[in-house]
Length: 153
Image (cartoon, rainbow, N blue to C red; front, top):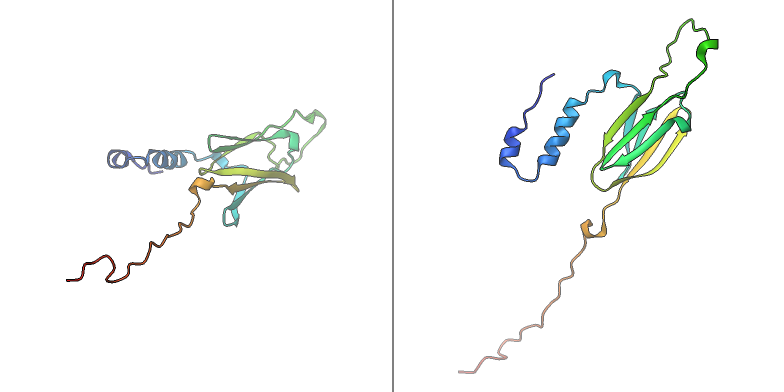
């Protein structure tokens, strides 16, 4: 895979270092195997949903954490007594996992649920009032009347 050098961006742009760091980390993190598979979709203008296929995991074996705009989903299997089971074919992945998603500023997790082997995480962008667009009223000053205030010559 080809790497991208962001050094010129650091030399000529101010305040974009966070974006360059995000691009660098996205290029570096090629999660091996891509397991578990997931979807990211938009469900509204400022709403998103992440769906992760976690078949076989119970809710108490899954953990969702958000810290500094990084959403981390981990799955840790509890010890199963598999000594009694004999597999002819074992195709279901029952391994621990960790998935990380970088969130934009002001994106918060609103809800999470587990149904039919899909972990669903709903997210919403909640801009503070100070950052939302607002309409500025224009005050009209008093109308100037021609001839008033001028001396007749």
